[in-house]
Image 1 (cartoon, rainbow, N blue to C red):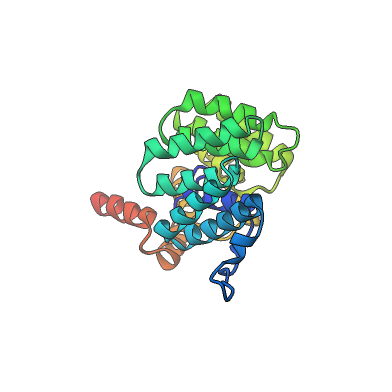
Image 2: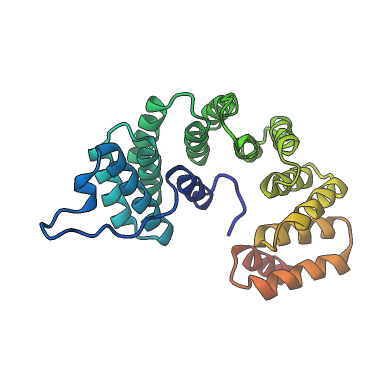
Length: 264
């Protein structure tokens, strides 16, 4: 798995936070009516959204879409349903429809930090870095947004992609000022300093990352590259051994195998 605050997997976690854990299937009574038929539209939309999130998490995109569309039928202003539907559409490769769902969510909740962060992350994945920065900035301006370190980290990762390293550092350090042990911010700062050819500082942030997070193929690959740059072949070999033993089928392990075979 590529460690990136902008990944779909990360946004599924956000959808779970919006809608809560998936509920158990709703049973029908003797008349054939389900519980959702007997509750308010807002409550029905919420339950369908939770079910949709559960199906999305399990990879059942068709059922997820059905539940989320049903949620919007019950309550067209239910923001979590629109955000999660956007995630489903994006997973299906339907970027135009995903954008429509994200924009509708932002229209309904123009100052909600979590919603703005999700749309900004989508824009970054589409390569629209300048527009993404605008929405990330709006997200962290929300005084009620409780996880601003997430938006700052996503913004930092996006700025790295666009090679705006100064802005990336600003965002990532802002994230750590909020939560000094936020793993994604530590990883992206390590990666940023590696790209800046500051291997000693990159190593320091990667060590901080390792102190608060488990092994990750992207981080192990970065550690290998950092130690190689520092001419520490023994430590580089240790990173490579951990990567090969724990994540032999990862893209990072395959990339290193390909590079080392070319050197032989």
